[in-house]
Image (tube, rainbow, N blue to C red; front, side, top):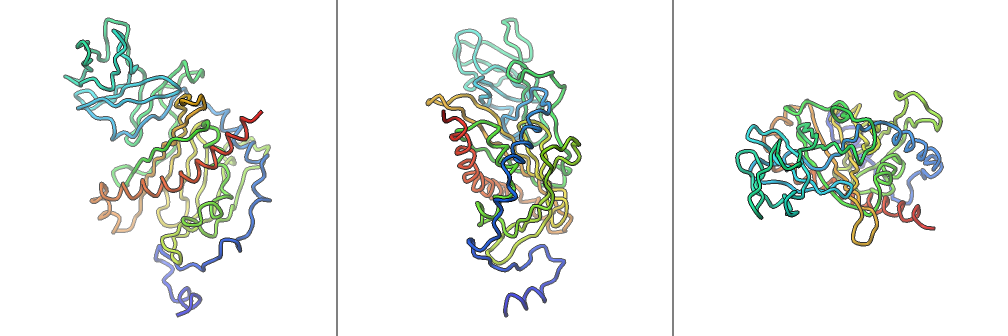
Length: 336
């Protein structure tokens, strides 16, 4: 059966739809629409939004009550763990006694017990060591670093609307690149590269709405795209999605029409500090929160632990390419 006949007979209510195979070199060029000034203006507006000094540093499920988790944000060593009630605690990652790495401490009674000399550290201590403001949103762990952010602090991070976690599947993927957070955000503010740079994942991508360079209304500051997510070279899931930046280091893609409407992909760019070569390192921490009203989705949720590695693998494949884009952008910006 020809592709044309198949498309005519295929039920429109099915999420998977047959799509024509378009040779990569025969796609419609998008360079004229992807205007550098437009992308730069969108990035500048995003960087002007408040973050309240909050930084994503890990997936919530990676922070446990039986052992500490080490992390670094903007060159600051951190340690995170959970108390006896499961609440997130984050503090400086260096023991105030002789500098031991607290990521190697033991958790005892909800406190950290340093392995070098047994110093006990908890929510309060008498040695000047203090926990930092932190937030657990159920998917991601955040820490507030006022000295790093330099902004007016907010009580909690800026988080956009998400699907109900009780009826969703979420996964978190983390990759690190040699670039700055603005290079990661600029990558996502260029939706026109999608089907050219990621032909294994996207097809028939069209930007339906892009903000004007001089836009001042936040409600209009978004990109809307029509795109087909490829499952096989000839089958895909067509959707419409929007991209918005709620803070300087976050960009959110939300499906607004089609299969999985309401699902979100949150991409957070967290500065780690300089690497051994003196160049900046940035962690891309991407959370996918998927939902669907279809009956089969409830079955998928029961095997979520088996599905999450597949979701992380798909996100990592995209970001291996996109980090090359971000790293190239940083390299060009940093040249004399």
